[in-house]
Structure formats: C-alpha cells, structure tokens
Length: 201
Image 1 (cartoon, rainbow, N blue to C red):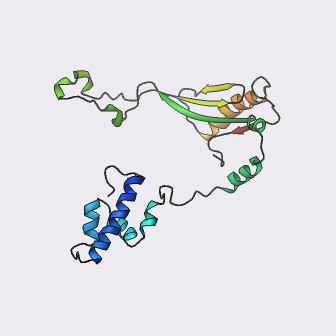
Image 2: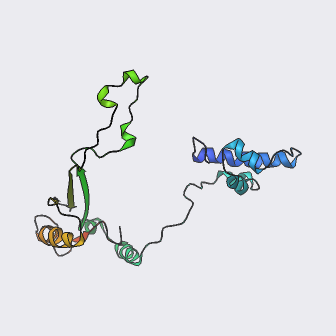
Image 3: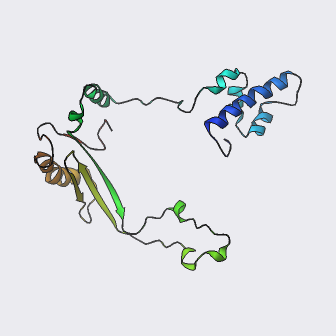
C-alpha cells in the first residue's frame, strides 16, 4: 500500500514519521498504534513495524537496491572471469544477435490507446473505438552485428522460431557463412557469436 508518489525521498520521510509517531505513543498518546500510523502515512503495518523502533540515522540509508542479489550461472561466471582481462580489441570480436517481431498493424496495447480530451465531444469518432485486426501479420526478424557489419534475416512466412528452424536456417544458412567472411568480421578465427539465449546474457 505504497503512497501515490513513492520515491526514496518519500520513503525516508515515512520512516522518520514512523519513529516520531512511536515516540509520541511512548510519551502518552495511547491512541497511536501501528495500524493508525500505517493509515496516516499510507503504508502497510509491516513497513511501520520494520521502521518504528529504528534510529533516525538508519532512515537515510538508500534501500532502493535492496533485495536478493542475482546469482550467475557457472557459464556466465566463467565468461566474466575469462573476459576480465580483455582489451577493447577483444570485445570487437563479439557478434551479438537477437530476434524480434514487427507487426504490420500495430499490436493492441491498451496503455497507448488513451485519448486525452476535455470532454467526450472533443474526441473524433474514429478515435473512440479500437479496431482489432484478426490474424494480423507479423514479421520475424533475426539480426546479428559485428564491429564491421549488421546482417538481418527475415523469417520465412509460416515458419516458427523453433530450435530446428534456428539451427537449420538461421545458423547454418546465415550466421556461420556471415561470420566466416573476412568482409564481415575483424578475425573469422576469433569471432564469438553471442546469442541472446546464451547463459551469459
């Protein structure tokens, strides 16, 4: 139940309020309890319980990055360890890639369909109703880039991004020939293909 304008600054203020209200209760304001404070500052009772017995100094620490730390896979740790002494030239041998979709008709996104107007009469008739296209066309695109070139592949119509399609068509027919050509990469023998599903990504 965070406040409407929740920010680190607002959280600091609310932490201080928890302590102040707790001190007021201890000074004789017996009507003050955790629920009363939570209602006043628009926070949960858990937030109040966590903060009302702490010192004021603790309120000013930045807790915005708190939480569980990411645990990297062993493959990612190995890559980081190996790349820790890389130079800028070493990184120029990377060939990252990704695949994405382009919709021929804008994909329905209700957030972007808002129309701002003073009154309903100010909205044009064609903007009042959303048009949804049945079975709208979608173009799948695979891209790979190196320090020298960008290469893209448009997915064949009717094909899916299956592992078989990726291996047989994307990798065998496009990626490997692209990476072996000296016109496309700095060094074909040292190029590193980085797919977005690689453990290090």
